[in-house]
Amino acid sequence: MNNEQIYDIAITGGGLAGLSLAILQVQAGKSVILFEKNTYPFHRVCGEYISLESWGFLESLGLPLSQMNLPIIKNLQVTSPSGTSLETKLDLGGFGVSRYKLDFELAQIAKKLGVQLFENTKVKDIIKTGNEFEVFTENEVFKSKMAVGSFGKRSNLDVDWKRPFIAENRTSLNQYVGVKYHIKTDFPKDKIALHNFSDGYCGISAIENDLYCLCYMTTKANLKKSHNNIDLMEENILSTNPFLRKIFKNSEKVWTQPEVISQISFEKKGQFEREIPLLGDASGMIAPLCGNGMSMAFHGAYLLHNLLESGENLKESYPKKWNENFATRLLVGRTVQRLFGNPIMTDLLIRGMKLTPSLLQLIIKNTHGRNIGD
Image 1 (tube, helix red, strand yellow):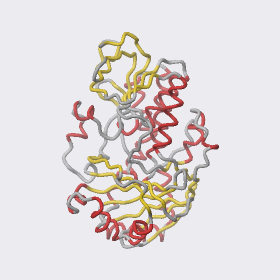
Image 2: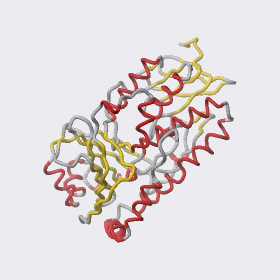
Image 3: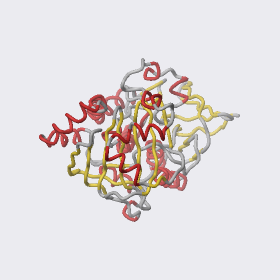
Image 4: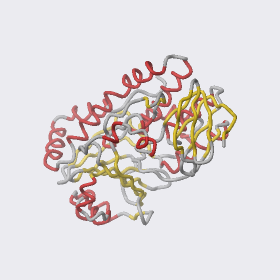
């Protein structure tokens, strides 16, 4: 069935980047349609820490962060599998909020502003025909003057379009599994900790309602060693780190089963596919160890919105601006991703950073940006 209306912009994927762009575009007077395969609110595998560079931007979208009593995070702890620990201040700092709450609140703002938000709707294909785009769902075809892909880390469209990162041979950058819980525990609310273990790392930080996000990334090989049993992997591999052993022993998991995602890739992706600009994790994903993917999503939406409003040639200007803002972050992220994971190497790195604290600060600086809009 064809929908006769021609929208100014159609966005596939209602995560942070897609919702932010939808709000910015509707605020600019555009007719916006957005497709999300799930129904809000729902959980996503995510570290749920946002650097403070995004605070002002989110409030400008209509999210009253100052009234939400969210934990402000100013300290960082990094540990090796053997338990070597390094702590430092976070100059910029961040705050914690669950994706369950954040995505839902942004979706409510978008709908109130007039975004046509189709939940529980899977996009099967997006095709450019002449000067228009056609977005194919299970039952309808929607038309728009512009289409944007913001469909996350890995989607059916990535596979159907045979994007290069899907076809890559297995490497240390494309065979990751992500696992997330919400837990109740005793941990400083102003601290984020990154605890390394063999071929992986686990982050813990406070979110709303006195809960904590516990999220870890590891290899498919680690899960296979554990007979595809997550509990067994946590007991035999993650808990070799004494800090993680203590957390698992002294925490209460709010959910009986965690959120899990597989086949995560940190390979280079690209900002266009089939003449469709890509946004958020669909255009490039920073290693979670660097803790700034959520701010990159917001910053990317702000950047693409400004280019759409300027009337510039997107095919030329968007990749250029994207690389100016994110290429260094992603390069540092990929380098860090490769260096951490080996227990001996990780221990040596952390000991080295304890002797030269400026090295860790340099990594933090190069994986974070300025306040969005500055």
